[in-house]
Length: 288
Length: 299
Image 1 (cartoon, rainbow over the protein chains, first blue to last red):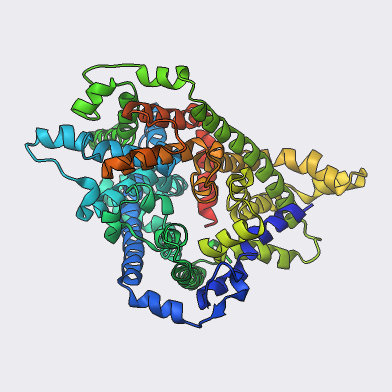
Image 2 (cartoon, rainbow over the protein chains, first blue to last red):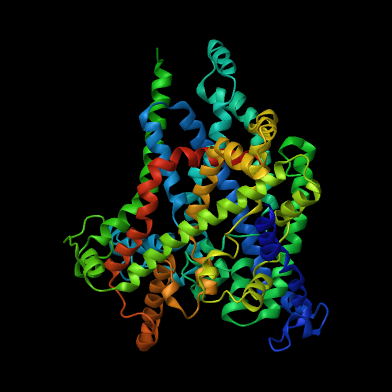
């Protein structure tokens, strides 16, 4: 009965594992994975000598940290506001901000393009002229993209992220707030001294889990949304896009495999570390 | 009774949420409006919320011209989603139910076997080589269906814990005493009781399949008949990029695709691409929210 599922995990997750040795070999398609020559850590040496290794590590970690900080703050603000509102409109708000989460990154790429397309984009053809400014060649100017990517990520994940905070807040004992009201506490004080302290465990937990995933990035967000533009690689290349391009576009399998192993191993250590911390704080929330 | 302070805070809350709501839907509105804009007026004035001239040309082009490519891609997306959800739910449920049995031999080992896939994975390079060299999924329907998406450990463990916590042992035992086999007990007793979690997980799987472009991008290389709507959209965007970078690429970019549709047609296609999701959204929203909460609690 359990066979199909176990077989699938074996094929999809376990069978590729021996292939990790490619990173330690001079891969040659004709000889296959196991016939290729062992070269030890040479691939890693090459990888870390290039500026790419630093750029992809920096980008992956920088964006994840930015996402964690900005999305957490925004999600809490939205959750607190929603928890205070009632009625039909609350539902409308919640549905609307959750909607972007259901779109594929290809479609999101289209949406971003309709705003930033150099020739016809809304920003260049309507917004900037209105402000009396000149057109900007968005897709060849790296300096704008950290903002665009962080904005797009927040745009599509706030609705999702706020749900967990919202349901946590709605689970709080109303008695705290009632007695605070009797004491004449303002809304700000209620937030500062009741809501925030009660939310603290949830915030810590979700943040630690996100830190455990800090070595991974959403391939679609960094590949599809900037339309794979070479001019933007300095700010859009992450470990995932680097591995993809190395494997399927540049044919540089050894380098790509080395970056992949680097990600898997550091990622694994981070997940274990984060989980260890979570366990220390609250055993029930730990993954294992 | 509302105090003055409460009213002010409520007002501020409504204002902020209205702004966020607008930010959330304005890009989607721009897409829909541009799909209904006259192409010349789009090229002249750019993507605009208030087009000079409206036109349903883009949709007429899609539906009238015999662009079988578009319908095939759309059909492929539906087929992929339907097959994906059914298969995935079947194997997820079977595995989850098995793992939920306390008398299962090697239960801990098997659970760890499932769980470990969440902690460590080989990444793209070995996975790609495994699927292309050993299973030859390149340019087949299986290439869209199987890699990565067919089942994930997270859903299995989520469903397993639902089976463990929400279905009392007594009910299952009553079925055994009545002489029901293990399979029949699952089918007649456990699954009907687990409907809410099955519906929720099925919905997440469905959205993942509908929105996936990754598998098609990696594994569908030559046989563009297998493109899903997402892959088609992706390909069209790439062609536009190639064109704007180098006009001599024209014949190159056209290869495999009959012609490059206009900007408005592309927007109409993207609109059609999100249409099924938007149409079912009101019905799934409650489940969706519940699912996120469930998933959030356990990582």
